[in-house]
Image (tube, rainbow, N blue to C red):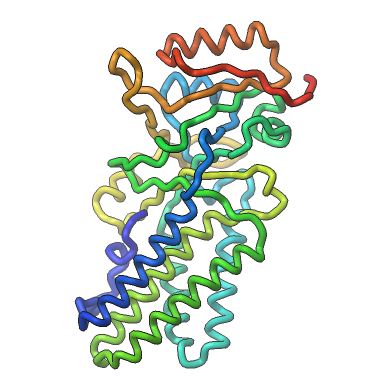
Length: 329
């Protein structure tokens, strides 16, 4: 993800400060980096993307995944609710931590700035290979396709953005636990810094750096929050974010965003090429291990069409499976 401290410069000194204070500020930021990385740990292999026939054809033909803007997902309340939880927890800290209320007020303000300025895009995946609910919701009512993708290659470093492969967290109780733990940790670090008696002229910069680290982490984890009613999906996401304040690369990426019309809305998206080196002729292939087709499709004609397309695109080793779900057309 972009470095929030580069994107949001407050106009006063942000250091370097006393080496002891610097160590605390760096340790706080690194702790959030470690926590964020933990959401990528132990990704199932493969991960599955459910889509319809046109989506399957487009992915294999073009070698691209379509990333949708988080504010225009199928569930329009999803991101709003996650961010509302963040703000409510910060408001609670402002009310309960009298001697740190100014700190958390600044955190809330910076968090709102991050939320309003960053544009995050996602590509959805699932740990469920052959799920009835997934077929119905995303697999064209059972006449679609589930693509098994090698998770180890999805999170590779890229030049066009800082992509993260992360698992979703279900249930408000767990959401609040994550938020509260981040706030508590920041309070702990900040109290250690105050004990070092920083000079008055450095205090504003120290406060800013601490609360930006917290605010940016809270923004990112809020993208992982989903209602417990969706837990059966076992969703994972590829996430990437850009800001017009994040430097030349991010500004240029936002200039290349594409738009399509659906559901009465003009929807921003990116088609990212995820092909890697792989075929015998030295070409580039998606990490596509398996194609499973829906339970309502005819096996003979469906397998012929899938195999013909895969072979023409050099996916010779990709396996084909039929869904085992008992669903009739």
